[in-house]
Amino acid sequence: MIVATTRGELDSARDKLEGAVGVVLTMGALHDGHIALIRAARERSAQVLVTIFVNPLQFGPNEDFDRYPRTLDRDLAICAANGVDVVFAPDRAQMYPDGEPAVRVDPGPLGEILEGASRPGFFHGVLTVVLKLFHLTRPRLAFFGEKDYQQLALVRRMVRDTDLPVEIVGVPTVREPDGLALSSRNRYLSPAERQAALALSRALRAGAAAGRDGASAVLAAARAALPDPDYLALTAPDLGPPPPRHGSARLLVAARIGTTRLIDNAPVEL
Image 1 (cartoon, helix red, strand yellow):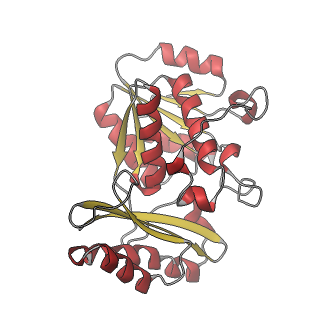
Image 2 (cartoon, rainbow, N blue to C red):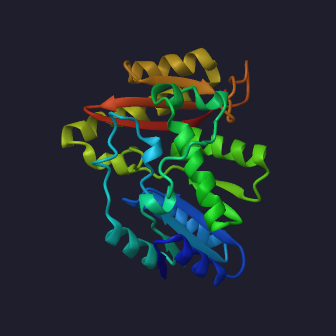
């Protein structure tokens, strides 16, 4: 496995790869959810490239950038054990050599709802770094987890609207046996908070089970299981309005558990 920390090292490593390259973009602190992405990339790509970069552009002034877990040695061991060919682990100066970029990707209206409404500017930072990493890594396929569903939808929209030659592949959310969606931020939770966090997945299951009774029933059932969320919304799979009567939808939720903010989502059939 090649580990590159500079753009020059990445170019040299990238030029040695043959066949379709699949990329997994991460902020490190890898867990089984990331391993599922790597395995999906391994199945569909001749070569797998993983990036590890904690992107400052997507953290607000009162968020957890400074304490976000950084476990590079462990992450590299996980990548090596799962057949990754190249890891690109740049520092801030490599990604933003001129300081924070004056030009950023505008996510459009879908980037201003849900997470975008709760975290202003968040998706500007996400899409800017994703676009930069796509240019630097030049993948044929890119793998994103459905746990960050709004991010997945917006990356797909950016690729479509800007004609990037990248296929975006969604990978189902990986959960603990009790239903909690895997997240690097789960390590912030105390044992009591870890139990309280199960309310998110319970709300999603309750909402999905009420799908046959319509959109209002879905939201009512979910709110009964999680009465004070940051947001709880039912949308179409592309984040537009849900179908008026029958069809596929997505139920998305965010809630603060102690000082930790968690998100989750699930498909719903109306």
